[in-house]
Image (cartoon, rainbow, N blue to C red; front, side):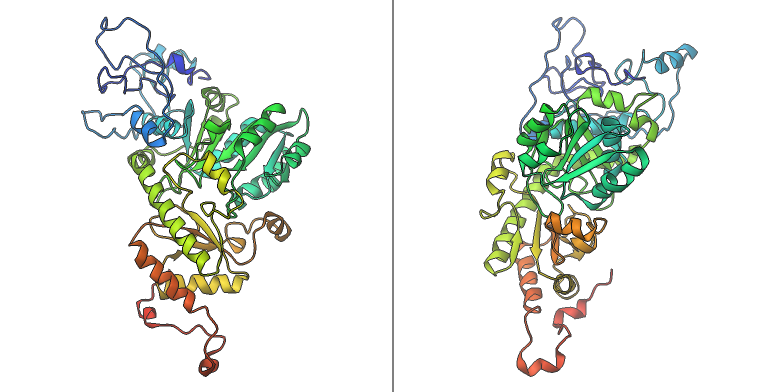
Length: 483
């Protein structure tokens, strides 16, 4: 069982319905690298298949990944909804549990908590997207993060983490894992190499953990530097790339493991909860070990129907990210010209603008997330009220990556798990409004809605003093939407 995720060079089971002999059909059952003879008839090519070059562009990589056809020749893969799988002979069951047979050896399966054909197909797509050897998809982003940390760190281990992280991850590292398994975490300014090095405990630090673009302050991690520090200490660099799929490929910059909340930009529909772990096949092997694997034993299993839905959305993720980025840059630039304090790495005056430009994949912009600092929570709430209820610019909701713009005041929502002093150290001000910029409607239509909402934030004229303390609605309030 522990060998079910064999080395990529061994995974050469051919497609049932390949593209042909052009090499585009990746014959690997689980891993993204390597290749097959494309299902060419025996004897047509006696040479050992050569590993294909991994495409650097995420869109090209997704297009080059193995295409899974349906059971009856459908252009879309079939959904394998079974929880368990039958065998024809009793001895086959023994061989499956002994690891002699499996998804990569005979295209055989035992139970969907272990491996499922539909979920594995999505894993191949995720590995292609991130340029990693393998990937495993999970039931949520937090399950992916938790499983990776428990697998790599172990009881009593040490983690060096960025002080600015998603609140759930911060709580996992600062509270849950210390209580559950004695894990110790040191939170540092991940931009300060000296601080990161000083936080490393020789022989004890197992993981350095950061987000490509921090949630919510949008600081951009120096992944090559962090990889160098982690590897010199014998640790692994784990990077959460939820904010920047396609925009940045952390594994190409030195990250050992890339995790995702697939619920966000990758899903794009705000209707699915899912996660992914992208990294070496050896890691996924270990995490699926029958006796000690975090994935196998904790069971954060993705439903095959969810995997199918996501596999249909991944091919157009690059196009969606381009539009998210285009609109975010346009809004950030215009907001800045209005005198607002805007955080967006695509702006030339952002402290990490050059870093992101150097690290990003060409053509995908700077991501779809921006922040506006309104100073106080009251002003942030008033702005969001008008943006949703008066002008219909966007929706007050957590999460991100939706086709509508989503807004939240981070300090009182997605970062509320952090103590106030930790939020202050991380640079999360009380009035910070995080926006996930959508692409629904036209850009000019949405910008006009933003300007109208902002105008309602200005001090009222003298003859309106009687209305002081109240927000004066305009005609747009007649189209009030309740949430």
